[in-house]
Length: 334
Image 1 (tube, rainbow, N blue to C red):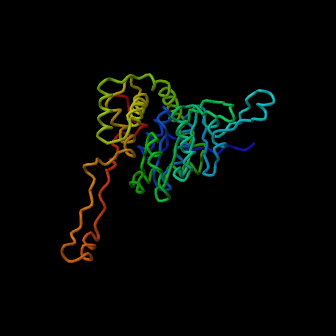
Image 2: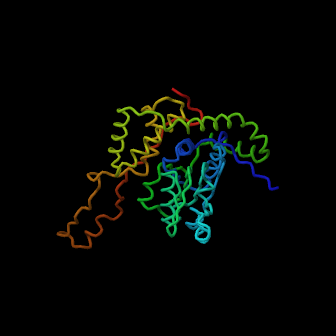
Image 3: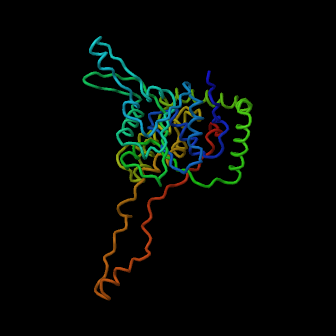
């Protein structure tokens, strides 16, 4: 029998607090719409996603390869069997296998747009529907979607970018203390995985139970009128289009409150999740956009005017603010 390779525990992850928080939020409420992680290789993206899967009841971690077809992702229907016996025979795809767990898509910006659309539709609804030749089938697909991308390898269309619930941008540099802690822990795990897992077993079980409780409670927590107003004001100030950001922010805030074991959603929950929701949606207001200055060709001829803007810097885009919140694993109820 093939032995399952031990997975690095979520409880032992160091640094990357924004990433850990975003992963926990989409695990608590997959309807948030997944998280898109932008950053270079070697920043613990896949390690963190695999570690998250171990905290979920199913423990499922499904990797979607770039060359996958829609049938491999969604599943297929056996039309021949349906015509012969009248029974719908469904062959499960990767979405069915990932139900209750994590679906990981590396380099999602290189995935075909129709597949990204399908992924995001299913994550938002929690249901995978397959239709073919008048025959249909559906099944639950409560999936925590984790997509990664390296912008140097291609951008994601703005329409698809907006549909990811949360966004995390990872930096290339890690502070000295965190680097040391990561290396120490990784060496200990590689040398004796079973002992390392045993040392973190109690904390890991506590996180799994806390996550399970939050998943049950997140959809029941109330919002005050003032909170609705704050969400609208934040999204309006960010000049985001539509109200998807508003809905995602409320869901994420409720998930955060549930994780913090609160009985209601507070303003500090909004503070913790707002930048995760707005970072990839924030727009530069029209009045702040720089219009090209007409060139004066009345003196010195066209050649001189053509060199007036030589070396000019492009206009600045809206800044992505850094999040300022506590480690999601150690923050306590307030």
